[in-house]
Structures are given as C-alpha cells and as structure tokens.
Image (cartoon, rainbow, N blue to C red):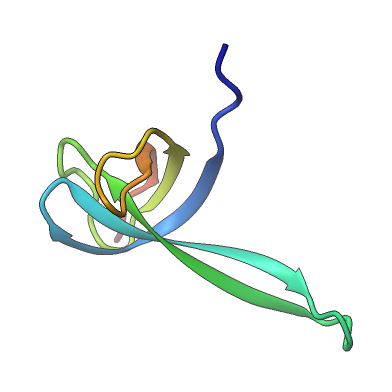
Length: 83
C-alpha cells in the first residue's frame, strides 16, 4: 500500500525543455527571532507529458517516482492559464 502523494500549487517559471517545466512553489516561514513571515520559494522540475504548460500558468503538481536525475514531480492539473 502506497502512502499519500504530496501535492503542491505553484507557477510555471520556465518551459524551455521538452516535456519538462520548472515550477516555483512559495511558502510562508516565520522568522525564528523576529517572528515576521518570510516568503520562501522552491523550484521543482516537473514532468509535463503533453507540453501544455506555459510560463505564468498556475498548476497543481504531485510527487511521483524518479523520472530523471532531477524530476520527481508531475503536472496534475492546470488551475489557471497565463494571460
């Protein structure tokens, strides 16, 4: 039995590769000393089988088995297309 897959929401920042997009996921982290919230950004290389994602698209990504050296995520759905 497999565990729950991790799901993240982010914005496509690069689509220059074939079947791969780079997605930036933002999270808020509280500063340990100043107690102020800071934005932290993580970039994930995400598998996009049909090349449907473009820069600026808001997407939902899900963790999957390793697909290459850097790719461990897959596009689940495109939530919002870029204008």
